[in-house]
Image 1 (cartoon, rainbow, N blue to C red):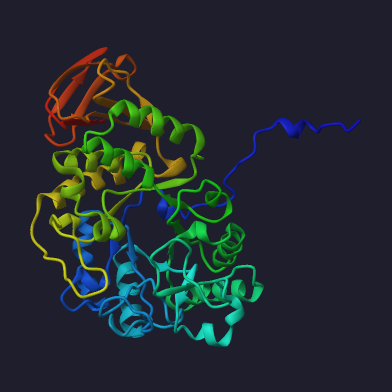
Image 2: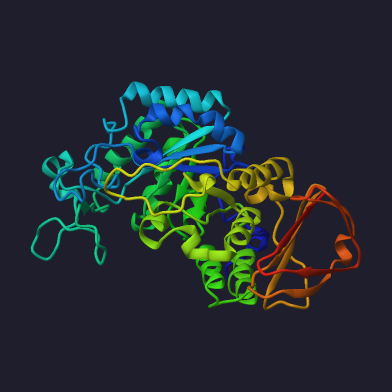
Length: 439
């Protein structure tokens, strides 16, 4: 009979990678370079770095910077996700020297920069299609094909059973870290690419320097040895349904938060957002998606366990869907959203309860007597504490909260007034109202 070792009963770490230290309380900002300015250039992004740093941004994410395929191109300028050359810069945005200057400027402002990476597919006229046709997936007729069941006619999909493709793509990732000092990657449709490819690529990248890897996917397994962060599509969906009157705070708590705190590893950072390029382009504006619930949903997203993201223009109240395949610059204006983000991100940087992954406090429920409409929680870490109360409904409600574990004097984040919390906190909350308290 085999004897089990005592170690067989010891808990084992699920996540085997270490996040770079600078990720612990970081925020992220997505730049659609084409639409970021009338010029649509790296130079114009560089000019705005002081403003973004003041906003509280730590990581700049550039949408794909590579040349765009001409064959089967959509619109006049094409999709940035139809990559023609993985080791070149799209001249629409500037030169390699311009990109190097931007990277250096980002670092000089105490920020970090990641590139959008499209490993799943290339454009039809990427040279790899002619040089290595065996690296691509084939349809039943033996010809190249796009991603099945998707309207992606401007791209063709790779076949990751080919070891030489894996080597090429890994070396291409390393090229940008080695030669341009890039700090990591946001990886498009990451779960469409085998996880063992990502795990090996992460190891080879970390051998150059510690990198931050963000997956456009929700798969838990991606956190194990490949990605620091994954998309939180599910949180967006729940908040959207609540805003439309099709769901409730109770459903958010029991169908999402319960699973989040129980299933996802604490080291696995979730990317929380109200908008991104996909939502904006294909599903409408934040105003259209969230209506009067928008501010409440935004604040909830930024206080939620995970890394908060801003899509360029949100801070200026972006109120239209930007064109995806043609030029359509953002209308920049002074907007209250900028102050909202600045206030929340300052708290995030200073209060460890809101830090990312294992560095921050977990989501602990504060019980209340209106669970269908109201969700309330506390996050706490190393003596820092944040209490959050949200009326996620269009009804005015009077709510009693069980706060016996959290009594004390706190600061109201948005009024800067002191609030005393006793064993039973009672609030009269207007539709979509919220209260954020911190010590």
